Length: 123
Image 1: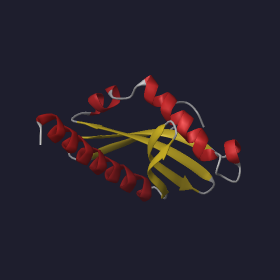
Image 2: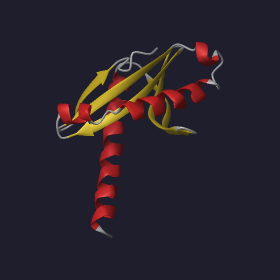
Image 3: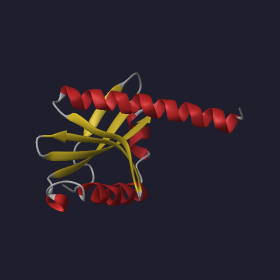
Image 4: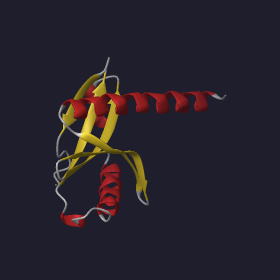
């Protein structure tokens, strides 16, 4: 395994751990998982959750610190997630009229987690 492959595998595992931490945080707040790593034509959404009739799309960002995790959010990712979320909603009974929220979940340090609800200002 090359150094780049090793780093990639480590990043993949760290991402999976961060997603599990994020999922537990949502479940403690009464949300239930609908999809994990849902792949649409515009890219992947880390977590899709439900609470009542609301659908929550969550992008999980992890790093050594909260500030570094925030710095990993890019406008391109926002566009990709919004486009993928729109495709996901086509399968919902109320379609684009479904109550939604787009969150960013920050995971840092030894499992610290912060959910930034409606982080992109849509919903």
